[in-house]
Amino acid sequence: MKLKYWVLGVFATVIGCTSDPPANPTDNGRDLTGIAYNPTPYAIKKPNQIYPEMQIPADNPTTVEGIELGRRLFYDPILSSDSSMSCSSCHKQEFAFTDGKATSLGVTQMFGRRSSMSLVDIGYMDKGLFWDGRAATLEEQALRPVEDQIELHENWTNVVGKLRRHPTYPDYFRKAFGINNSNDISKELAAKAMAQFERSIVSTGNTKYDRYRNEDLFAFTDDEYAGYVLYFNADQFKPDAQCGHCHSGALLTDNRYLNNGLDAVGSLEGFKDKGRGEVTKVLEDNGKFRIPSLRNVLLTAPYMHDGRFQNIDQVIDHYFSGGHFISNIDPLMIQLKGQPKLNPEERFQLIEFLKTLTDTALINNKAYSNPFK
Amino acid sequence: MKYVVHQALKFCFFFGIFTILFSSCDKHTETSTANLTLTFKANYNGQTFLLNKDYAFNDTLNLRFTQVSLLATNIKLIKEDNSEVSLSEAKKIVMNNKTEAEATAGTSFTFENVPADHYKAITFNIGVAKDLNAKIPGNFSSDSPLSAEDDYWVAWKSYIFTKTEGFLMKNGHSEPQSAFVYHTGSDNALRPKKIDATIHLDANHAHTINLDVDKILNGSAGKIDVINKSSSHQQGDEPVMLMIMDNYQSAIK
Image (cartoon, rainbow over all chains, first blue to last red; front, side, top):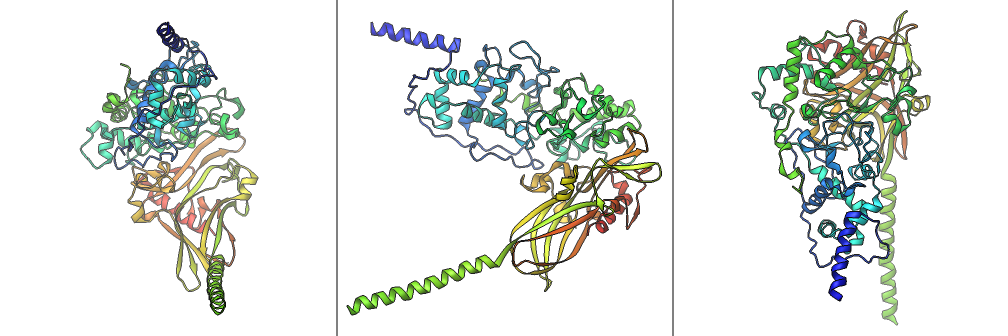
């Protein structure tokens, strides 16, 4: 008889996991103290000498166990309301952790208003996350998509309940964070784990661009080098494609927020998507968006915050058009408007250079892949 | 009894010594350092300077600045005996004059625990000296201004020392005739700056340094041809770049 109830109990727990009821407040949880807590520190490797040191928050040091847990959460649809989507649905490794769509489709079959951003080197982005910088840290960012109605459309109370009742997640949380009881699982710990995994997604530092920047003067073909010159305006007798003013350095972004003249508006109040201005409430910030990294740029189409450009040629056309003037447009856009356009050979060379930013080893690195496959 | 009195006297003696020692230490700590706040304020020919406001360039064109910033490095105080006290390796000075209030406030840096003394000058470099300029942002921790990628220009292998950006607006037109984007850098462009200032740092002290934005494009080295030479991004732009650096040097007081 006892065995019968025990089997029924186990069955009910399994059913409970799949139907995702909220956590039972009278549940005493599962004791985890029998599981060893001995996390292994994980040092984020600097890809090469042109990279800065990544700043790791003191209250969330990276560990092998934390990254492993974060990776599982990242790929697990348990975070969504109907168990159909995970973080990886919009951040696919083969697209340098974007999704190849103009804007992303959420669990309610509604499209979001902005394009999925790459997570490569995300741990280095220290001036705000998302296109508008509304999250200051990865720990804060990781909390948002779960409760966004046009993303995972779940709430954290439910997610935490599912994780507490799950047959294996409490063990992973114990190993990563030393919790004593499954009821100690919290959304903050889940976010910390996902932040650790995201910080671990760093470039290999071995693209052709990296090799050239690290003094391998023969890294480029002639066309790639010619494109590099255009990109960084390195030769006064060649046109200035003006890319390198904003997409610069190791990260190929300077992480600022700019208006690049995408929308024709009569006033700064007129932007349909106010971008950075939504966060700061400063009128001058309306229509500004975070400058994305151009690492792996040929894998991350469509382009811009709303994915309006399907390919790189459209992007180049936009920049050389100078965009639509409004008082907070970046002056470089106006300079581009007055410049001669790139000829077909120069355009080809510029794109050849952009190809050197593709990090093939990263997108094939098993450490970042789906652990459930 | 004699022993007790002896022990009491001994205690009083050592207590007294300790009291004198500790109180003199405290006094020493209290008076030996102070905080110095340096505030950089931008004006336009003596008037309040605002970003995104039009200033006459000639009879038909106006300058509308959108960015004015500089890297100040090796910031020091000079004592009356000419010895030096280092304040900072580098500071990024951004003239964030979007509103009257911001223009009035300026951009401030407080240097704590500066040795209390009498100083006669403040010195710094406008730009980055050769040894530091040979490095790259990746060499600096994220709390250093020299770690910022937007202040490093890969093609020059140099930090960007100053940024002066904006639009050339035609009278009565809402759209600009053109834009100007002057970035300066490279070892030749470094300009030292010395500002005479009487600073008696007996207590916390504040000092203001002024930048006349009008003089950046029309200063001691001459007037920049904003119409025909509207940018400096390349080594080939060195003549205009050096003019702008000379202008910055004389525009700061």
